[in-house]
Image (cartoon, rainbow, N blue to C red; front, side, top):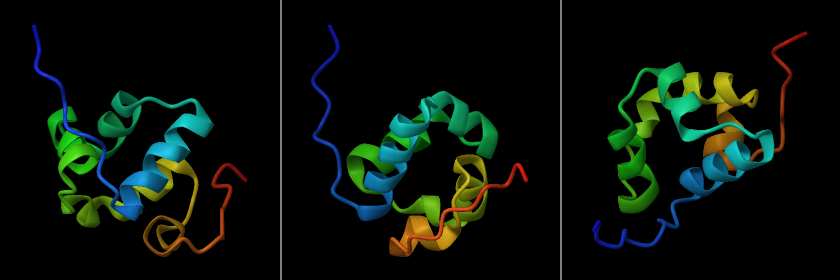
Amino acid sequence: MRPAINELTNDSVSVILLSLLKVQGKTEKDLTEYIGVAHTTFTKWKYKGVKSYRKYVDKIAESLEVTPGYLTEGVDDLINVST
């Protein structure tokens, strides 16, 4: 049996990222495949507060159709890249 996983990090970018995935109905797998990282990397962001996501912010933002500023600074400037 698998041991319990730590609580989610309170890192603001991770919280926003997880919220956007939920709202948009996307999975962690969708995101990790799009940006080209292993799911274990995402797990470190989510549970351990590892901030290696910084080098992927542009690609993450593109995937979630927001600006990098929205992810990192909470700036409410959502974009629609499909137009």
